[in-house]
Image (cartoon, rainbow, N blue to C red; front, side, top):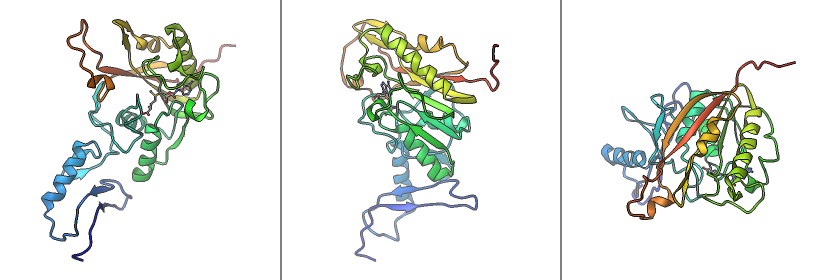
Length: 281
Ligand SMILES: C[S@@+](CC[C@H](N)C(=O)[O-])C[C@H]1O[C@@H](n2cnc3c(N)ncnc32)[C@H](O)[C@@H]1O
């Protein structure tokens, strides 16, 4: 054994209910050392927790797929969760808020029509793998040929997540259906509402629509995009969550002291479709 080199050690705890507490702990060690002190492994786990790979649950338990049951209307995730989506994709989001909402609402079927780098798809795959959650998922994006301004979402879902471009702050393509390709705000606003309505229509009765959106300030002019989400006339607003922004490209620029404080938050507005909708004859 002394010549064997171990790169990754996976510890998996499986209980009678399945893999229901810690699922996988990836601990990098350079050599097979049966006498590795416990504190070395704990130190590695603490690093993984600091990097957002795992949640520390206390009593030696770590789990990145646990629900944050203490979540409030203000959330902050300095570590986005590096195994979900791609951090190099401009405008990507952390998977933590999405995961917490899916678990909180006990969603069995989930859709994301603006998938980007696949953050939500990867969270659901992890929940299914490590929590045996058995959640069905549909996701697509304009870059995969699905245009939400023109096409309906195929199917009905408990939970729909939409993370649209924040107008043209990041241009994703020159496609005429791309919300980030709108020159004027009014054009963007109209397309955004069309997209939100398609998401709403794809909800099962009692389902939820979560809209992650941020405001924009360009050349000093502030555009409160959230205002047009809050006035979306379908369903009932159940939550307005303020999410602190981290790791933005603008964080790396130094602007000096600006006239107005820089935007460092975004919103997640959650709508609920009624269980029973009145049909007007
Ligand atoms: C903010 S990004 C989503 C990022 C994603 N949440 C992630 O973590 O990677 C917005 C996405 O909307 C897509 N998009 C823009 N207009 C669209 C449309 N009409 N239909 C579908 N997707 C669209 C863009 O291609 C882009 O990938």
